[in-house]
Figure: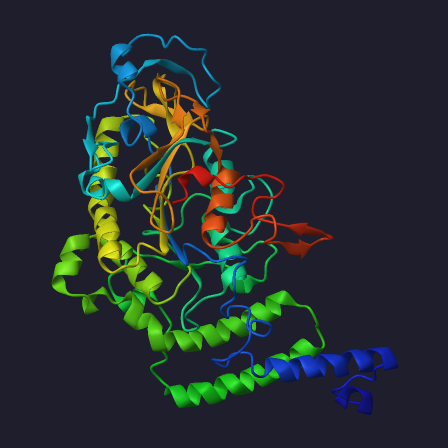
Length: 475
């Protein structure tokens, strides 16, 4: 072995030397990266001020993946009963599969609350908060396929890699609790369609990516696995982490601008800090029995109660998936499947709205309900491999569907827009997914055209070059 092989520090030129000296000052500043009083310039998840006073400070997104039927939930269409079994007197719009005659809703609608909001029998518990709901009946997307529609709804872009809504919000606002992730996505039983792309950070630093939780687990050690180190006390872990941080920062000096490395540094610190708060936040046994019963102690009840506890502790964006795959995708047996799905989720969602309001949290927590698109008012025709040859379901429909919002500065007991008389296409006060995103950001205090991130030589934003704030739904 010669002397050159023993040399651990390479000889560097003047330019490299000056660059490293400059980075050394950056590393010095980064040594305080994770102190409680770290500034936004140092800690990317520290609290940041929005562009203007916000109506909401956090979001709970209830994602009914697969596409719930608008005409069976929150958009009643009596004309479907009149034309049941007959051809609809409108030109058929392009759907993913052939459709046939009109299919009436098997569910009854009733008016609820002082507002008289019409809601399907599927959601009796949600209906108790009718006067807090802002129902958008004129949503529309781009295509009738799950994958691109999921990415459009979650990331504002159907094809290319882009940051998700929760990542943009974490980037813009930071988090109020440095011991928990700013963005958490819970999906029981595994990933949904498009998997982790639904909560990706895209070209934003990985620090802003959503943290996935498999909420089927009841045991805290499985729900948030590998958080607690049972072999070393916190003091010993702190010393280990400080040493690791010094080594990583030294490594980072030679790799300026490496966002993946920066994100990894934050991940180590967050994992350490989560030992302080995560067990408490995810342990619903610490809730009174009457609250646990209000939500229900099944999977959806547990994850919805956890969502409230997370928001209560300062988490910015919590997304709850109904389940893996696309459970609301009722190509056949719609009556049976939608009734089962609503029964699984209605109690917990109704409890969430009541609980948030009683705690004074609904005022600044924006609750969003919906899927990636809706369903056709006409029956889906039999096709091998898609609906088992049955004629009792509905196909995908991106032309018109329903979502609702509550709290966070939106009008309660309000209906915005409408579809045609059969519920096929949004025709009045239409709201595209880009408009929905612009409105969400507005309620959080952001001008969606100004919340940008420079990447590949241009400024990107969640809404790209689209989107208008739907001011009619803002209280």
